[in-house]
Image (tube, rainbow, N blue to C red; front, side, top):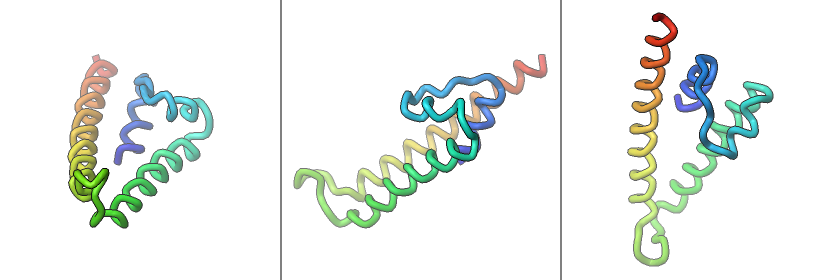
Length: 92
């Protein structure tokens, strides 16, 4: 969802603020979407595999995973809000 919304926002004039992903925006859209989804997928898969472990013997990895899930929910909500604002600006 993040990759789709990012590409839609970019098509309406938004700018990618992640400097790493910004390197791939100007190139092939399929490569950009693949990288965005692959990086997220690999990181989440690793954290799921390590969910029973503790980071520095203090913080459980599954807690970090839930925090990242919450961050993605917030990010997607933010992107949807930006999409609504850009769509309204284009219509006006």
